[in-house]
Each structure stands twice: as structure tokens, then as C-alpha cells.
Amino acid sequence: MAGSSTDFARLVASFLTDWLPLQRGYSANTVGSYRDAIKLLCVYVTEERGMSLESFTIGLLDRELVVSFLEWLRFRGCKTSTANQRLAAVKSLAAYAQLESVEHMAQMQEVMAIRSAKSVPREVSFLTVEQVAALVNRPDAHTRMGLRHRVALSLLYDAGCRVQELCGMAVRDVATARGCPTARLVGKGRKARTVVISDATARLVRLYVDRQRGGLPGDAPLVTNRSGGRMTRDGMRYVVSKYASMCHADDPTFPGHVHCHMLRHSKAVHMLAAGVNIVYIRDFLGHEDVSTTMVYARADNRVKQDAICALAPKVTGEADMPDWRKDGDLIAFLNSLG
Image (cartoon, rainbow, N blue to C red):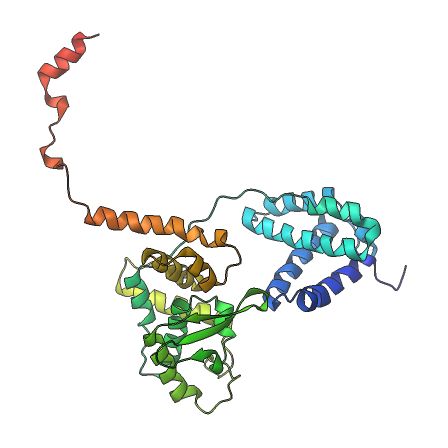
């Protein structure tokens, strides 16, 4: 078979370049994540199994190999949740392979039947309303950069958007008309949704567009970097980290590490605390299943507990409680019972 590729190589190529992006409509980020998982599988095959990719066929991709691959990932320090993501990518490849190579259908179904490992649900990290206000208002809106950054931070929180959704927004995607301002977001799987934003955020975006993005076509990027290009995920991480560090320097109680997604988490928790129905929050965040949104309900319980503890009256005066260990007669009585 010299000079030609294996069926595994051809399947991987069509899986990543045609099936995922064109047939399934997956975003570039999702395709990249699947590609990275398959690259790790190839590293395992060559370095740990001593196989050559030039001779590795789809028939060698069986349950035993995939399970060993997962163990190898965990041995390298891979978290359970990350290993499960790698497994999901391999199982998706197997599902595609069984359609393209029906002779391996039974073998691919065994791979697809591998169960994900149970992982401890991660705790949602979020900021208080006061902390969000401090972060969003930290950029100096009187400067071009400060106004641009304040708009980005405001939309991250107020629209509850993912970083990539913010970076992909165009000028026309924010309707700032008074009464019901909205933002249009394109999320995972290229699914679009329109969310309501506050009048304050709408006024800020309108000011920013008039000053810095006026006269541009509607498909021009809304949030840009310093050179005028579209803002990237890494660029937005830098912006959030920069102003969070400033807030922490001003107030040591402000979290030392803040990531972009924390603003999305914060918006969801604050909506729950305000009594907004979780089904609406699911649609607002763009979740397909309400069970994904339920993670914020557990975080909301902690918010409510803190509020209850702060508001609850002192029913029992702690200073008035006597120390029974200092009552000699009681101690003597208890000793006599032995």
C-alpha cells in the first residue's frame, strides 16, 4: 500500500474537514478540540504502541486500544473531565467510521459503548454584583482603549455570552433602540440566539459605535484589538486579567484570578438570585438542556444562604450560654453515674 493513505487517515481527514464543519455545522473551536484529541491518540499509537501511522488502519481502532489510551491520558495527569472530552471525540470518530466502513460497524459500536468516567462536579466560580461592577467600570471610558474594553466587559456580563460569541459579534448584532435593546449571538454549533441587554449597556455600546465604529459596514467586527482587527479569545483573556488584577490591587478581597467565563457564570447566578425562571436562563445562555443550567442553582443556594445568615436575627445570645464544664456539682453528679 506504499504511496497511498490508510482508511484511518482518509476517515480522519474527511471527519475533520467535511463531516464536522460542513455536515454537522460544528464551529472551528469544536473541530479544533476534536482534532487535538485525535492528535493525542496518534501520539499514543506511535509512542506507546510503537505503531506506524502509515500502517494504522481503522480495523486497529478497537475498544482495548481506546481504553488504554484513556489510561495513558490519566497517567499523564489529564483531568477526568478532559479525558471524557477526548473520549467523546474518539467516539464521534467511531460513529462516523461505522457509516463509512460498515464492515467495522460492530467494532466501532464497542468503542462507542465505552462509558465516560464519573467526575466530581466542579464548583461554579462567580463574582458578586459589586465585584462585577468594579471590574466592568475599571477601564477608563474617556480613552479609546478604555471605552472599547468597558464595552467588551459589559457585554460579556450583560449578554451572558461566551468569549467566542463576543469576538464574533458584528456592529449590526447589537440593537440599541430604546425600549428593548438586544444582542445577537452565534453560539456552539453556529446556533444564533437574541438576548435582551440593559439600557445602560445599550447606551454604552451606542456611544462606542458612534465614536469608534461609526460609518463601518454592519458586518464589521464590533469589538476590536488595538490594531483594529477582530478581538481574539487570548486578547479578551488578557483584558479580563488586566482589569481584575487592578481590582485586586485596589481591594484584596477581590478574587486574584478571574477568567472570562466567570462573567457568564456571574450573570446566571445573579439572574437566579433575582428570581428569574431557570428555563428562561437556559434559553438566555444558549444551553440545549436545562440540566446544564441547573449547576447555577446549586451556586445560587450558597448566595441565598449567605443572605439569610446576614439577615437572620440572633435568636440565641452566644455570650449568655453558660459553660457546663465549670459546674463542679454537675461534673461530680456525672462522675457518680459511672
